[in-house]
Image 1: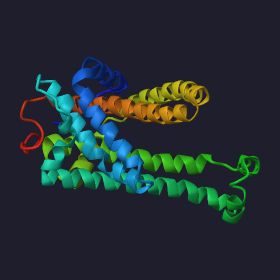
Image 2: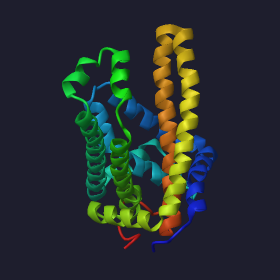
Image 3: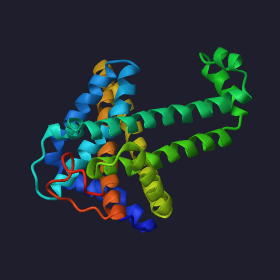
Length: 276
């Protein structure tokens, strides 16, 4: 059932996700609000909350994908659909396992870059200049970040390729974690040009959002003081959630195009033979 698609198809996935979101803002608002609430609660617990949220992200993404899928058949959407996979032990374990893989890969990529950096700079010297931005900038200016950054980004993209189709394959196909990762990596390798198109569109979206936030956030902080700083944090979280919604819509569209998936009323937990 695996298909090959081209660069233009991959480039269109992100706009398709945004269009799908724009056409269904009202029914998706409850699901998005619940995700925002979960993110706010996680932010109240330093470090542990963010790590837990990262581990749960594939499970939440699967729930949001199910909402997109049910919209395709005109079914009702409820906020609790965000945790739809939690009720199925097999899917829950696989999706949380994917979250652990994502967390481990992100940490490993960061350690890879830090290891490259510390190989060029004495860690004691680096630590001594952390409180002096000017001295730190001078210390880092003569270093080469390219190879370290390239290795870290390559590892991160490899992990993303392992997870990109794995989430919907677990959610809609009931595949176990190992098989879903293998199938996802295979699909990404066979559709490299399409994945490149999606990557370029995602970079463009990130740059656009960065420019907007760089203008809005300082204005809120300066104009409204402490309340503005709090409001700026909410805007930042809302913007992050918006990007997550658009990316999930793009991921769902990619799954449909590459795996030939068509929405059906009984898709999701309870139907484990959809992609058998």
